[in-house]
Image (tube, rainbow, N blue to C red; front, side, top):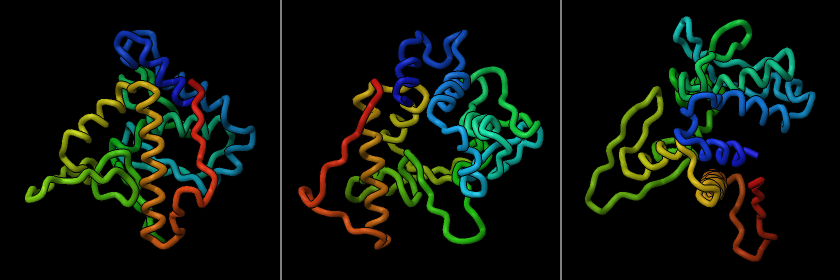
Length: 208
C-alpha cells in the first residue's frame, strides 16, 4: 500500500511538488484503509510520536490519543514537511504541527534504552553501514540530534526520500532494513540468525 503512494508520486511531473497533489491527503487515505477501528486504544501509552509545534518551534512527543482520527492526525503530522507535503499544516490536539525531525531527528527517552533507527548511514543502532575505503576517515554532520555520514550513498537515499524510486528499489530498501534489524538483534544477543534452509524463507509482498 505504501508503494502505491510512491507510485502515485512518480506519476506526477514534479513529484509531490506538483500543483494540486497533496501528499498528506494521500497518507490520510492510506491510514484510513489500514488502521483498525480501535488502533488508538492499542497505541495509547505504547506508541510515541515525535512532532514539531509550529508556534513554539519545539519538539513534542505525544502518546495518548482520544480517537482513531486523532491518531491518524498525529501520524500524518509526524511526517509532514511544509510545502513538500502540502500547504495546509496538520492540526494535532488544537496545535499546528509538522515533522518532528525538523527539531529532533532521533528522540531519546530518559528512562531505559532507546533503540535508534534510521534509513541513513550514521551512528544509529539500526541502519545502513556504509563501508569506507581503507585509510580514509569518515565525516559526519549532526542534523537535529542525528549524526549522518557524509557520502554519496546517503545523498542518493535523501533523493529517494523526496522522489521515490521504482518499486524494485523500494523492495531492496525494505529487505535491507530487515537485514539491518536482524544484525542489531544478533549483536545484542536477542536472537541468533539462522542459516539459509533452517527456516522457511520470508516472503515480501507489494501492492504494486
